[in-house]
Length: 266
Image 1 (cartoon, one colour):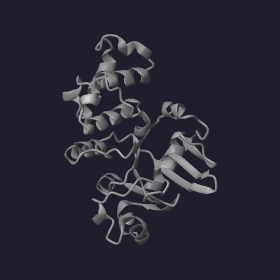
Image 2: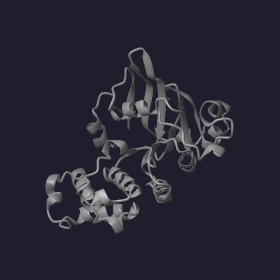
Image 3: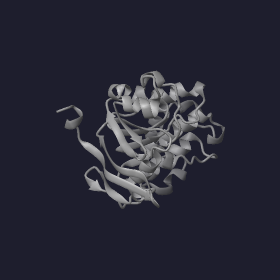
Image 4: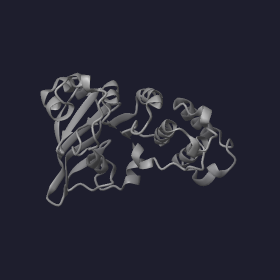
């Protein structure tokens, strides 16, 4: 038995199908996310990555199949109910308030998470537990030096860091990172990559990404989608040497030699 087989499954997609008319955008996909996972979902343009993530998060309803989160069937739950049960996606919550600062944004999120309602509008600092959590997040995500600047003036890399900080403030059990470095200038990428790598061990992460540098530096396990179905899955070194992956996704060179290539969205 492999180490992966002995781990607890926190998210299980079972034979998911999504049809749009006569087209199966997702074709009987089964995926298991283990506790504490660093799992990457990759695939070429049109592979079905976005559709699958929309199914997992409740944006779309499956035509067939079921989704189980921590042993509970969530197939029919709306997106907000899945967030409440511990599944958070960066893409779903990246609508930042341009007029708020990172500190205010995180205070709002933490207050909501702790069912404090609009109490955050009170003078910041009144709730010590909220402020402590905000300070921890600001430090973890390298935002302390810009915590009092309005979000609209932040560099794009800092905005992406704030989005992930908001996601973590929701205290997820499962975190779906939807292309976290997309659009981030080269000079700001390293900080974001290091922060992603340092996410808490107890949070199970599913990374959706087409940047192979990030994928192979982050992932401990990988699933490859092609034409809406699972082509293969395995350890990064196995994926890197898989001839089918090279043929349909990474070109003729080795997978690890193609890290710098950016493959289109799926």
